[in-house]
Length: 316
Image (tube, rainbow, N blue to C red; front, side, top):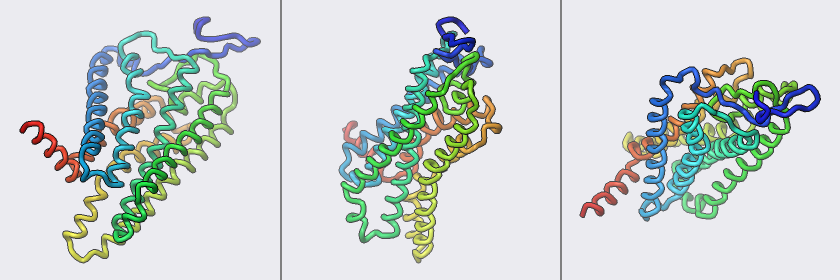
C-alpha cells in the first residue's frame, strides 16, 4: 500500500484509503459490463421517474397505495445511485480507490436506504391489509396523516439505526492491504478489513440485522396471512382474483428484495465468499431496482391506464 493510502502508528500501518477488487478478474469484459450496467441503471432511473410522474399527474392515482409507491420509486432511484455510478467509473479506470470517509458515506447512504425500504414495504403491506380486511374503514385508517406518519417512520428508522451502525463500524481500525473484495462499501467486506477481533461486533451486527430486517418482514407475513384468510372468505372467484391482484405486485417486490437481503445479511461470516457476495449484491443494487418499475407497470392496471391516457393526450 502506498504512503498516501496508509499511515503509521507505532509499527502498525492503518488504512486511509481502500481499493476495490470489484471485477478485476474480468478485465477483458469490463467495457461490456459498463455498457450493460449503464443501460440497466438508466432504465431504472427512467422507469421510476415515469411512475412518479404518472402518479403525480393522475388524480385517480392519488391514493395511499400510490403514495407509498412514489416513496418506493424515489427510494429505489437513490438506492441504486448510491452504488452504481461509482461502480461504472471503476469499470473504466485502473485506480479503484476510495477514501475511508467516502467509504463511510457510501455505506451510510446505502444502508439507510436499504433499511428504509424494509419498513416502507411493511407500510405498503399494512395498506393492503386495511384495504382488503377492513374496506369500510379504509379511508379512516389510511388517511393522509396516517400515510405520512408511516412513510416518515420508515425513513426515520433507517436514518437512526444505520447512522449508529455505520458510525460504530468506522470506529474500528483498518489495516493491511485495504483491499475490499467487493465493488462497493458493503458491511461485511469492510468489517473484514478491521485489524482487531470483530467477533463481538459481528454478533451485534447480526442481531441488528435480525431485529430491524426481520421485524418488518414478520409484519408483512402477518399482514398477508390475514389478507389470505380474508380472500379465501370471498365467495366469488372474480372477487378473489380482484383482491389478490391488488397485492401481487407488492408480493413480487417483497420476494425479490427480501430474498437477496436475507441471503446476504443473515448469513454467518464463514458463509460469505467474495464471489457470492458480489453476485447477490448485483441482484439487489442493479437488477431488482430495474425490475420494480416493470412489475408495477406490467402488472398494475391503474398505472397502465394512466400511462395510456397520458400517451394518447400527447399524440392528440
